[in-house]
Length: 315
Image 1 (cartoon, rainbow, N blue to C red):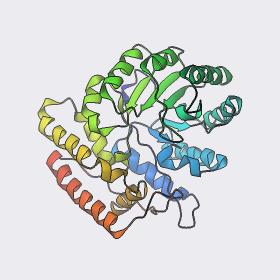
Image 2: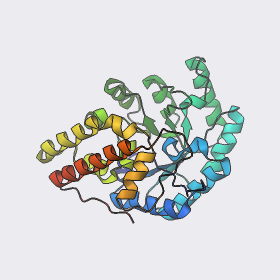
Image 3: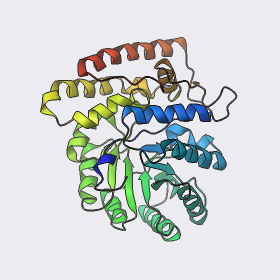
Image 4: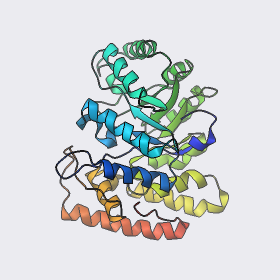
């Protein structure tokens, strides 16, 4: 998301990919889901990410899904999308350019696919610089994706990459508020913006200067994350902000369990016409899991009333 554009500060959903019951991409469902995110107040969209089941999509499907999202958004919000899926750096660079040609604002680089887990930081840094040299002036971002393994970017590395002028986005998953503060200091004065994925310290991260939040919890209750981004530093809402932060902490494990099936179920119950089908094996959506999500939704209804949050109905 372009620096100094305050409209891009806020919630950046990690988009789900709706599928039909036969496993094919549900493009009508994707239209409805995209509109739901925008209606909820999302400041941008992260398509073709882990929540999108990007590793279960074919290369052509990745391009088609992102192109469809861009068509639906019609420039109302910026879109970023993953463009690295392993292999030689030169091959990854070619797909980065292909993804950028769809019209995304930036192509996201998966840190764990730019060096093997056993390889040193220097190898990772060299590969990043090689990729940048092979992709012209394509704006990029980083995502510390936990698959195939989580490679965290150090504050020094992020600062170095940001100072190239090419890096405008970073989705952080370090889970460490002190590291977040160090990374924010490292990218100060650059185009790069940091979006935090870890909701346990969401309020602290926003107060520290993160540009926004990019979290799976927004695939259950997107307007809640938008509300938090808008009110985290408003003293008049201190009690409600604390309640929202505690709700996110208390339900962290539940919302990660059997995800993204549970998120699709939650959205479905909220009126978004999509299936709960996933291509990835994430565990069984048992009657007990369904009951727990139903309880979660009831708790959220009470929280939204307490905070005067208007719930978005499926569009």
